[in-house]
Image (tube, rainbow, N blue to C red; front, side, top):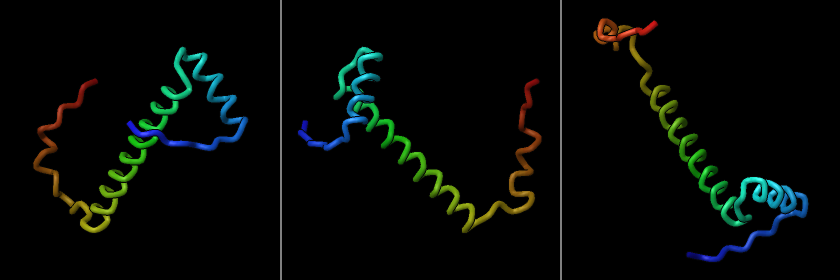
Length: 76
């Protein structure tokens, strides 16, 4: 593991401590989980951007997926 120093404003530290205590965890454990969640969100956003870019470069053609329409199962 590597040590990283962060400078946070007092209001953020107070809120962090309050939430960590309420969740029964430590400031560090909460911060690690929050950073992991933020990184996962950023990766998801990047994947969405790549998908959107791909469809902009090569849009779906009319009828491209019509062969599969009869295979769909719609459940009530």
